Length: 299
Image 1: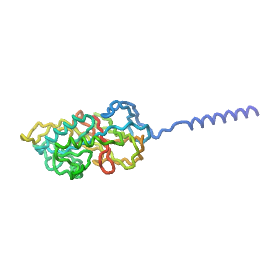
Image 2: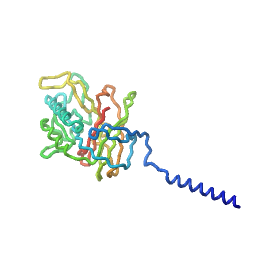
Image 3: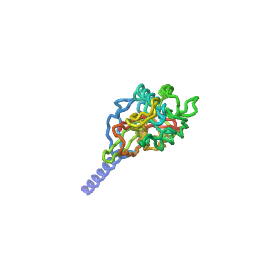
Image 4: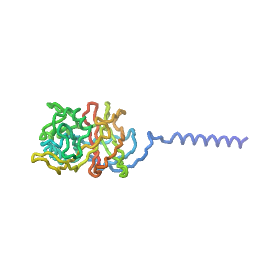
């Protein structure tokens, strides 16, 4: 009888230990296909270390220090626009003067976009649609975070000499969300995935949208200039594709300070595109369409 009682007590204790161990096991909010803690090249917080999570995910973590504002500049241009090279020069001057604080895509749209001599066109449907959506009146023009500034008729600012002042105005803004961009790439298929990691630094009630663009530089095309048709003109930052929609993919999860949201986008490169000349431009827009924060990654 004593032996049976001892055996029963031992089995009971073993059962309790197993139950307690199961109760203490931590169950993660999601399973990671790959987690690699590494240093992301961040133009604002160089050396910031984040987990590069390669799967769509949402979780709550520590609250990051807010990044400084990164302005998204979308320049509208055309190869038959004689004054557009002046716009290109202004864009390069702005990028040089504001290292890491401005990201840009040059969008060929409007009536002066048709190529010379059977060359490959630089315009795409998403760019034409954005040109009309922002009510851009002519080229050269540029939008800055897609904001319609006071006294302007549209988001497309026509005078390149005023662009730097618009950038400076937007650089004074703050942002409630940090943007980190990283990617995978398979050289055999010339395809991969782009990941945008959003880190909210304060509570946000509205829906947000994430937009991703691929740009290419050092494209040789004939360009009309004040001195005539320049056949070896170098076109930079040209928007080649939009893996998201042009107005962004909806982010409707709850956004509290400390919330991390990872959104992935598939992409594929045309065989003619130069991989080493491509950049990923990403940004977050508010419910009103105004861009809150930008970011980029080199492909």
